[in-house]
Length: 591
Ligand code: ADP
Ligand code: MG
View (cartoon, rainbow, N blue to C red):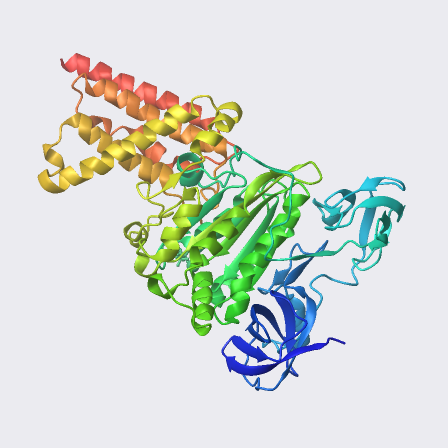
């Protein structure tokens, strides 16, 4: 039975003012009224408090009782998270649906993990071993290919007094007893953690390993690192959601946490319908077996949306702590910021830029700070990569959420409206994007793929920059006025854009390119450029070079050559040589 800590005085949307408040702490979770609405104390002033309520407050009356739970907003962590769909405060949506149907009844509380499911626990410690928070005490197979490491919960340290033998247990049954200075503590496979606090680790590591996404414009030009932070800003319809879906499907993280945050419900339906059918190409298992979904769509309560990104990142940190690479997607942080603005407005706080509260920047900073590559408490390497969509109104990047986000992320994939309306996808514009991880991940590419990677990549980038400059000149004087060597730059940039940067998320071959394929494709395109530059000097007209049949093959290689047929790029390089040599011979005869 929970104790009353105050009563409702005023109800203002998701914000409730309480009076006669006592025996409660800041950030404590409370239950309100007969419907047991869940809320969080966000302001406390003598005997008055302000509560942010995670459910619709319609029908809630002044005078209703408020009861304290004694704990802050927390998530339940343990085997069974994977494959689940939660709302912003970790209520399991499938189970809620079974309980209440399409419309969630208010005040329903369900344990987020399956309480009856038996997990095959294999102990990793023995009686007498010393364990501390974060130590691995055993493991279970959470999905056929995923080993869930059972970690010691926070704040418990001591000697193992007894540990269960290998067998099947539920998340509620004790699996170990630990002798601590405060007495014997029983340990289960589930633990909880307050979502607004970062989980601890030993130390931060340099994020020098790329997060391979299979998207060429990202991996080759603006690479993301494991443990990095990235933003995908773009106006409506520019491809934010599709990019995040692509990354969730193909990036080489062990676990994906996907937060649908304030966007339309049908986009989340896309994820729910799509993902279970998709297979992980490397492991041949359904992608859902590494995915956790958090859905707080635009039609769901606003304050739960505010909480959803914390719920998501806490779950991500939990898997990181086991020594895994986790990628977190949030679509979109602008909708999250709007929830913050709405709540702040109801609190009558002083707004700053465009009505957002002054603490918008610090909240964003605190969130992105929780990403990183770390040495975990169990002495393993784990990472949380945060990849967040930003939807600036009208696609205008100068608005506050995009600007503040830019300060805290190190990778910025700017989506461009013109490219998207020309159906040029991904619409990541090479002049509006950057990655500060380039220097950090280049050794990985040199060692694992090819020592020439950086040279080839930089050459391609240089061509694109040169093209950008030339395009302005063309607008003034027209393309015909340019000499052949400059028109070659334009032609090469065109080739890069069509044959390399453009990538179709719906083509079964093109949707994902392994790093080897990405490098060889770029090498072919750059080799074509080198050879052309050379023979143009021999006065061979550019139009002859652009008629070479190999150009057609280069333009189609992304769809024609699959990830397992990389040797075919050698044929293309040879074909370039043969056809260029012939052109040269021909011209010599004419001369
Ligand atoms: P946003 O989330 O920015 O509003 P979406 O991600 O929903 O935009 O993309 C809008 C549309 O653009 C998609 O329905 C799809 O047709 C197209 N699109 C976006 N990215 C790609 C891609 N990589 N390949 C092919 N089509 C794409
Ligand atoms: Mg979208």
